[in-house]
Length: 102
Image (cartoon, rainbow, N blue to C red):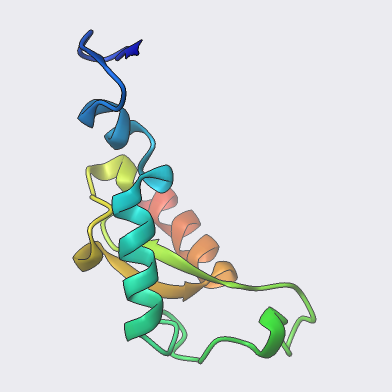
């Protein structure tokens, strides 16, 4: 049993800990799997996943990721309604734009 560094409760998995590490939680993993099953194109560039995750324009490895619509840092959750399919490169570009505007 560990002690949560945020609330001080002694629990095996605290809700505070899940908010601090949203990508490792079961909620995120289930939501990501559901998103991959339901969506078929990148919501940013509107292209389908690249064959073998290789971007034909750049030749770079560019797998599909789960993009948080409202960023976790801005208070967004890892629930299914806040995740959209995106190529890693599209997701990275969008993240940089978000940081520049914020």
